[in-house]
Image 1 (cartoon, helix red, strand yellow):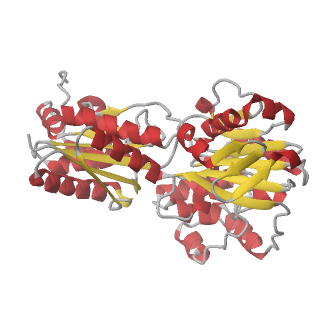
Image 2: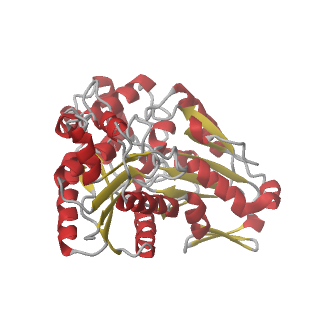
Amino acid sequence: MPERNVSRLEEDARSIWRAGVDAAHPKVLMPQTMQLEGTDLRFGDGVTVDLTAIRRIAVVGAGKASAEMARQLEEILGAKLLREKNVHGFVNVPDDQVGSPLQSIRLVGVREAGNNLPTPRALAGTQKIIRTVEELNEADLCICLLSGGGGPILELPADGVTLEDIVEVTQRMSSRGADIATMNAVRSRISKVKAGGLARRCRAGRLVSLILSDVIDFPLHVVACGPTFTDIAPDERLDVIMAQYNLSQGVRAAVARSLNADQKPATCVVTNQQIGGIDAAVQGALRSAIFLEYEAEATHEFRSGDATDIGRLIAERAKELRRRGRKRCLISGGESTVHVQPNSKGGRNQHLALAAGIGIGDTHGIAIASGGTDGEDGPTDAAGAVISPELMAQARSAGLEPERYLQETNSHPFFQAAGGHIRTGFTGTNVGDLRVVLTDAN
């Protein structure tokens, strides 16, 4: 396809989207939540730990953004405290997040990029984490760093359950459109570490869990299946869920054993503290849009649902904004779903952008960006895509049929040919998806 002149609106949409991602990075959010004041370590507004009474600090965790959270934690504590308090521990992360070694915390690569399933390496890394927290005592502080993507890489199967069972549950439920809360209702009951399992094994005097949330419209304990939440009630729909997704008898038996077991309370004092979520990205994008002189607003519409439907709704809102004139911007955060067909390639953001591109038709003066704040969109090399009427028109003139690509859930090859991909590599954060709509009457 010939080179295309990218419009100012498209460039601005990319810039505003990236500003939103940067605003939700741990290097911004961690110092806002965790501060060292003399010998006091403060977490949020409610927890202060007197470090003179602490013998050791263990740091554990898992997730796509937990590597950057660990880097920031070491920066906040500083080299002197890292030595004096024998800061140590393990954090399970995707392979591409290991990077250069930290001073005291070991980042353990446990899966390849793009693989959101538990692996034998994840189990081995989790066993190291469990041993670390079990070796602590009441004079110690444990800090747990959790972020989205932590569920598959912080895993220890329950008795009678295999790694293959957990993989099968995840694949079966995901392929049939289960949302994260529904999947976690089952996965948390077939694991020794989820649903408070990590906290129950911790022998420190205090456990503080810092959580960067990627879940939309769900409780905080959904992140990584709540390993530090000891009061997660079983989902009342469990029997229905297991029947609906035709889960194996072995998995059903393990769930029943979990429900009948007497769960001991945690011996340590547990605090779960959110450090940020999609709102941080939305606010960062808003600030950037205002700086670029757009009349900007945020909306809680489009937060979840089918990617095709959300793309069409966003297109309608874009045309409405265009009719109102002047430079306008609409920001939203959320997480849609798409069921990519076999032999097709795509992700929810690329699919949403393609549906929106079809929806805006030839209404000029519009650009729409949609991308995962972690830099990933399904098993592809893109975070998402930016569309405009100009991009869609050139794609059609080159013989591409957007409707066919949408029907086949084959959005990645469409943008590969037409242009428009957002490619960042992993961003260091993970708070869900961010969408930017721009219009201009000029």
